[in-house]
Length: 237
Image (cartoon, rainbow, N blue to C red; front, side):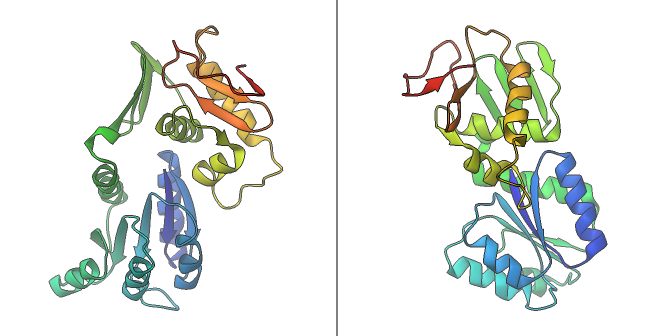
């Protein structure tokens, strides 16, 4: 899951970012409305966390502008204003939820999970591929009765693959959805993570879940007992 965090309070922003990344989210942090406006329209995010009090522009105005630009990403507003009319103003501007400062980070996480469930539908909380099960709420992965231990980034990578079965996933697509804006395209970090993830979820070499498409990227086989249709230049390794 990829989140855009728009917060100018450096200490709060870093606290939120660290906690979210510990839970496997990919977080892009910007500190002004101008930066948020620039990336939110052209990049894909699963949720926007938007502070109302920004140094260069009112967050409500930014939220309203994003909706006018057909940005449908769920938006969670953060603000010190707690009056009912302030909350109504935020919701009327196009926000999906409203959290008043100060707040516990655990409550923020719960609000995010709720927004994600609503945007994805109830079926989005559990992902399955044969005996491979990913529980997004409990942050657990298992194959049959065996729990699979994944790092936060491995978890995010597997989730992205399971949400896009049998599609060719290029390194650029993976980096955009799983890594943050500081990812260097010349790095081989994606290949390293895919290799590590493959060792954990591909227990049967005769029934691979992750297929390499040479020179292009990867494909997740949602039914490991059935090979995907042959692709020119494709090789399962």
